[in-house]
Length: 98
Image 1 (cartoon, rainbow, N blue to C red):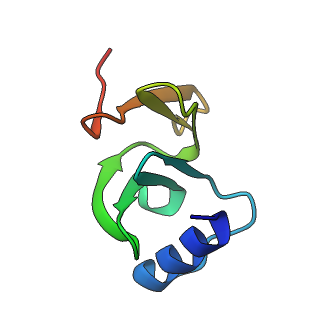
Image 2 (image 1 turned 90 degrees about the horizontal axis):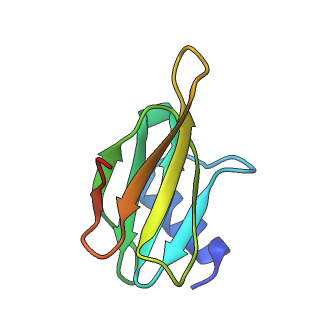
């Protein structure tokens, strides 16, 4: 599934438009989208995509990872400007506390 299809499906579901540079990361059958205005990362799955859950993450900016690993990382910042990295375990779709 290409980024445009993901973008279109998500904006139809969410009822708002993602801006240029918003982070979309797809791994396996799951797609993760940073939602800075909602302080969360959305996990979507299926065809058409449907929301499975949202991870509460403070001001997420990017979701990054590699297709050969079992983790994605939500990168964000606190109100003080401190950078944060939250691991998302892609095999269980949970956030890691490590």
